[in-house]
Amino acid sequence: MVIDGRLKAVLRVLTCVVLLVVYVPLALVILNSFNVDRTFTWPPPGLTLHWWDVAAHSSGARDALLVSIEVALLATAVALTLGTMAGLALRRTRFFGRNVVSLLIVLPIALPGIVTGIALNNAFRTMLGLELGFFTIVVAHATFCIVTVFNNVQARLQRLGPSLEQASADLGAGPFTTFRLVTFPMMRSALLAGALLSFGLSFDEIVVTTFTAGPQEQTLPIWIFQNLFRPNQAPVVNVVAAVLVLVSAVPIYLAQRLSGDVASGAAGAAH
Image (tube, rainbow, N blue to C red; front, side):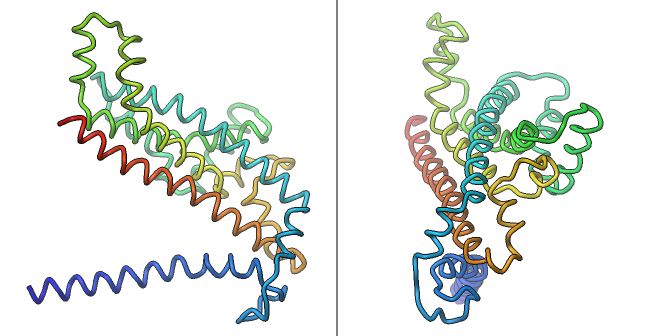
């Protein structure tokens, strides 16, 4: 019992240290977005909303934000369609090479972003002869966003099992009717959680975007990186970074809460 108590105490301390290392810098970025001093002296001599007003009137930041939102929405739509189809196909059917196909679907999110970016850059420019632009960014983001939807669909179908669908078929419903009235309602919240995660992943992606964006397209993370070392833009970059943190965190938080609520509801339905 004494050892267990000490182990729990050590784990609590380590958890607090990790959380401090991760979140204190993020809090500092948000605080510096209100710092009166553009050189970010510490502690801040005062707080102001001036830099937020400047960022709101920055055409470059606004355009980059719009591009990021458009890319994230389109990549999420593609991921929902293909990820759902792949999840249903691999969970409900058995065929030779099924595990290999599943591995290939999950692999893009497991590979280092720079490897994925270089591979997609070569594929777009060399193999397909495409010019890098908005379309290539959407396709690149969809490759790893599909994984989040695919994993959510697989987990939900595995948790619920095929019994309800089999009962629907026994009652005379066809495949499309069963999907519309039974399968889709069971997966709806899982798909929403996957969509929220996909949007968050796409919105703050920079490594893959760097290799697949054209000279005219600039997402918000790329805009931050290009203006990070410009002294006059530093306060505005802090504001935009704070917005990026908030916009990325909210979908992930909602997806986590939704997944937790759904798991409880699914367990109750199964019993």
